[in-house]
Length: 310
Image (cartoon, rainbow, N blue to C red; front, side, top):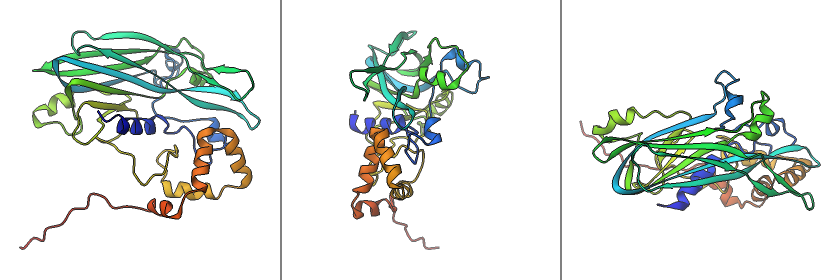
């Protein structure tokens, strides 16, 4: 398993929408954040007529030996509110857990998890803790053929918040929730391009709020990323990208040019607002011209066209 490749793409999923241009805490769209893969508390979500999800379901195929080991890792952000001179803002705090089960068979297992993130605030001698995000991970594996299983991973937000205010509910939510599945002693089957004999069973897999794809080196089948963003098998971070910009599907070159047009006052606010925003600003202002030119465009996967004689 290529952990570096997996972590790179999983982190891109995790922080998608973490901050939006112009990266200022006072900007309205950063006060009302959006992210893919938000799982709200069930009590709140059920008041919204199904508009906001409180659970997700991943189904995929795995061929496994009798002694195979399955791992499921849940990753998400939690919001941490703190008061600064510029504004009250929300800051993503990484939280996660790992589960391991000796073999993917039987009725599966479930385990309650309560995760609480803790970070040091800039205020002297004061720690700020987010509300615990209670979640339930259920893992089941159904035998559907010789050594072939349908693996089902359900993630639910079981926080006790029952209010109707979104601004408050989001602080009890799992944000950018996604999972990384690993198999030792088996292999995952691509749902995008399964073998012909498995197309029907692959098509029967039901995914709700997730999109499982193979990750790692091309051809490896020991890891799968279940993402709230639609991806292809073996997604990669473009080597021309100098660093994360977080802002949805914005084009790196255009967004970098926009950052260069910010006023000195706006840049000062960015530097005081968020560590990741400050890194974006510093990286942009110190970017060499040759690095910037690399973002202008690149051609990949060119193939020679054989001339056909009629």
